[in-house]
Image (tube, rainbow, N blue to C red; front, side, top):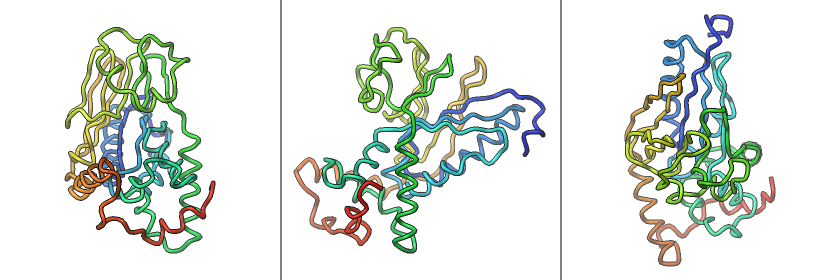
Length: 273
């Protein structure tokens, strides 16, 4: 549908959190968002609050789809950076200097690039993705809602928030009962298979890789609702995460996983792409 086909210039905002490699659910959800926006005779502004990579099986495909942008004229993507995206970039560009390097090595993130046909295509794709993620902002403020990956530190001005908090904060934000400068829309912490609409925030991470539910918060004027793409849990990702968590807590990778596919043997030579 071209922009000229829209009867109004009204914009509805959709917020999507923590895709985590679930390209299958993302594609379904984008279709649902388009259908919802068409029914509302509105443009769709889709704010992605980060964590596109890790856990699910197609981090590469997720980032590629986000780079491509919306299919419908007049719609817009606003992509923010999450903590897993931040670690992914640092892992690729600095290798083993990052403590969580092994996690990304064996948890499907870089593995999703291994189907690329040759080294030249790998360099191009991985380089574009690193550039894309590196340039992403941490927040989006529309005057009513404040979109961020993890949350904000209460009693600190929005302009003075620390990057570490925006990417990683949990309890200090989640447990805060007081008022905030904006209603905060965030992900980062899985809260079940339905979003939470609290007094000062909206929590949108429904654990797509684990639950099979990828959620879009719908913000249309004073209406706050949600739509979901529903699929199967990624059982392999869940089991791999369990094994890796136990291994890293005990100080090393299990022998069954301690081997390096061709892609990872050459990652260090990519340097700062």
